[in-house]
Image (cartoon, rainbow over all chains, first blue to last red; front, side, top):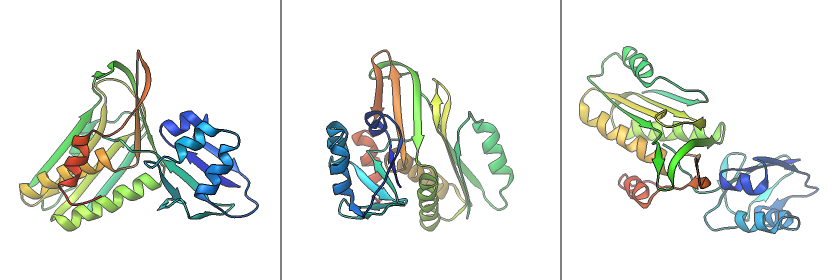
Amino acid sequence: MARLLFFGRLGDLAGAVERSIGLSQAHSVADLIGVLGQSDRLLASALGEDRIRYAINGTIVDSGTLVEDDDELAFLPPVSGG
Amino acid sequence: MRADIRIATQAFDPEAELAAFRIALSGAGAVVSFTGLVRPASDAGAVSTLGLQHYPGVTEHAIAETLADAGERWALEAALVIHRVGDLTAHEPIVLVAAASRHRRAAFEAADFLMDYLKSRALFWKSETSAQGKLWVEPRAADYADAARWGVG
């Protein structure tokens, strides 16, 4: 299972911060967003916005990077701390 | 350089933390610290709860890299970052940054640098709950401009 993490407002849209998805083969981040869009177009649209960054196992990647079945993929909207 | 990083899930005491940081110093002649507090109101009105989220492990790792960067830019004996996560209420401390150096300038600049990083690039997500509902906060243009002063990001 791949672990998906939705931070900030993306967690509200997804209904949870964390979700698991079984991947029988590797998918690019962009393809995976497409798969999620089959059941939730609003979420997929938000995940594909320009301002969203992606991290696989804690490292920032681009949307063409492949996600394997045991990876952790995080969707990172604009940050705000302090 | 000694680097202390803590993501706090409960309220912390900035004065006690700063005292502990100072007592452990050996050769520093200057300590500069910044304490950030939850404002009781935002543009949307009175804020009942401020929610802070982070990416466990990854947020800490990136802060550690930034502390190491600060250690290369300035001659620091030690630096400290404590950042709250979870639900906070008005007036509670949300962040404490401290930098210690032999002379004051390095400590002033390093503390400023670290706060600009935490405001604009560190992996935290902040929401404000007011009478209007819950709103996710994004950095202001001024926060990005502040961070750009250091030639990073």
